[in-house]
Image (cartoon, rainbow, N blue to C red):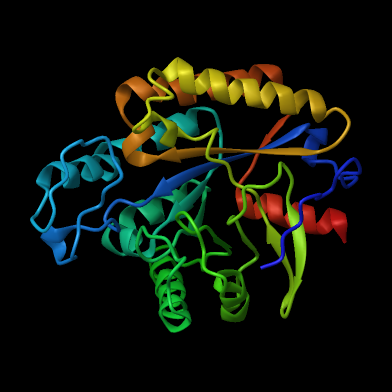
Length: 294
């Protein structure tokens, strides 16, 4: 796999965001609940990433399972209503199996004007997948999202590491405009592909509510909001001279807890006051970038 350690360097592309915004802000809402591994539902293991300390191997774990349930039962509605109050759009990065089990939520996202992109069939890494297995996972995910929303997804993001084949398989499948399996920049880039040009939209794990987990890097809502807004303000300053992009990663079962919801409200309030932010879906950012670098 090729690796570019320089990127745009000191010469970023001459691109302006709509409304002459300084920063394109991408809110990504991860919808994974129902796609995690669960012995109770026939898998050989339980999901191991969450706040629960005790791990149950080989037997059902109703404690962990109900923590995931919280995301779709309560977190979804809190987050969606908060976004609506600020007229903010997001990209719902959805696992195919999660959508298949809760199609109401995917349809609700589209009704509200959000994008539903693909986040794998299960909530799992693709790093060790065989090519034939990965082709099936991509196709199943696309079918599930299309069936629930009437719109085929144009974006993809793999949990953790993709395989060496993932990007090529997305292009070969057809219909994918971009993927977000990259963490190496603050700007998109375009790669030529067999079907035209494929956009790589960077994602981020630091401006992400996943940091509430395990290490307790974020404890209170202000920790998360403060970190995200420090990042935005710095990019806002740089954005006076060249375009910048920032991703804010959210999860239904993580941010959707009442004490953490204040973070989203404070972030959106600050972006509104500061100005210069284009809060956009990832498909919108990808298409705009393609138009500008043509």
